[in-house]
Amino acid sequence: MRVPLGDRSYDVTFAPDYQGLAAAIAALDPTRVVVLADEHAPLPDLDANVLVLPSGEASKSWDHAGRVLDRILRVPLDRRSVLVAVGGGVVGDLTGFCAAVALRGIPWVMVPTTLLAMVDSAVGGKTAVNHPAGKNLIGAFHQPSAVWAAAHTLETLPAAELRSGMGEVIKTALLAGEALVSDLARHTPFDLAQRCAAFKANIVAEDERDTGRRAHLNLGHTLGHAYEQVTGFALRHGEAVGLGLVAEARAAVSLGIAPPELPGRIASLLTAAGLPVEPPVLPEEALRAALALDKKASGDILVLPLLRAVGEVTLVRISPAELVERAKAKP
Ligand SMILES: NC(=O)c1ccc[n+]([C@@H]2O[C@H](COP(=O)([O-])OP(=O)(O)OC[C@H]3O[C@@H](n4cnc5c(N)ncnc54)[C@H](O)[C@@H]3O)[C@@H](O)[C@H]2O)c1
Ligand SMILES: [Zn+2]
Image 1 (cartoon, helix red, strand yellow):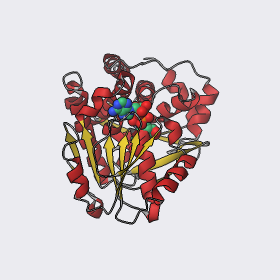
Image 2 (cartoon, helix red, strand yellow; image 1 turned 180 degrees about the vertical axis):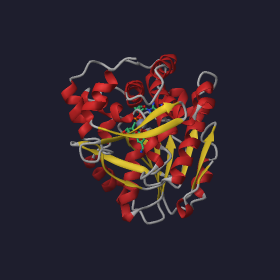
Image 3 (tube, rainbow, N blue to C red; image 1 turned 90 degrees about the horizontal axis):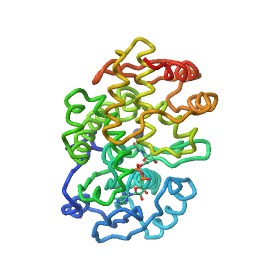
Image 4 (cartoon, rainbow, N blue to C red; image 1 turned 30 degrees about the vertical axis):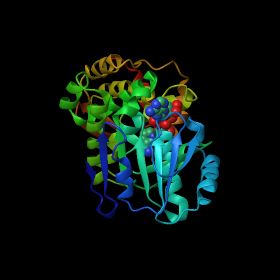
């Protein structure tokens, strides 16, 4: 599939393995290739400098980005050098960010090796590192020049990471409509990822800079991010998004937007994927405070996507306090 963005267009390939990746990179005509790889991700055999990065969110820091840039600028790089990210969203976001700022922007290729990255972060060009004040607060839009998802990489992915990715798959299916929802039980995670990536590619093509329809992709994420924040990131991203999907659906019912059966239906999709559906009991004051820091908030009011039904989204403006209150309401 192709993400059509004028001179920033790129191909997203879903392949059985890494065969063909070297040719896809060579097609970019790079002077040098530098691979930044997660220590647990299967490494492709490429003619490149390789930097192996420690796994975990801590790698996505400003400090670490500085150290990575120190190393790669010494290679040395020029404007036609290509960075290749091999890993999940952490290595992808970090590599994309380094590519956005090195020499004011060099090409990069994303090789997502987690389900979550295949579904979500690989397509769209949002790159970032974290700051103590919050996740992803320092970043840039910088589209990759190619994306290569290889099915065999999911074979080594821990089961908990695969489940976490399913949280993002279920979110996308709820946005995409009944056809994808009914395929959830019938298709492999890799096949589902491909369809989710295609759905996201369409939205990104329409709204690259996240000023319109791209906000729909934030479904489940407003409360999901707050749960991540308040639990000190004890929840995996996809788990938190799953909990957010159920709680936001409860809020939608309480607001009279969605039918009462929606939260239960979402909960059964999550349960079938082995994901939790009831958020841990968290201090409401902390939740409200975390919501107030939401990047999508304008002033004290949150703007969040809620489902009217599967495949039907509406943007709602609501205060953090009201969202927390309505999300508690069990129909
Ligand atoms: N840019 C975006 O649009 C976007 C979208 C969603 C999420 N994100 C970011 O993505 C990050 C989360 O990404 P993630 O869930 O992929 O987590 P991750 O990158 O931390 O990877 C999860 C774990 O899987 C391991 N791993 C990766 N590939 C493996 C493989 N093939 N085999 C075995 N182990 C493997 C890693 O070492 C790590 O321990 C967050 O930082 C989030 O902010 C970005
Ligand atoms: Zn997400």
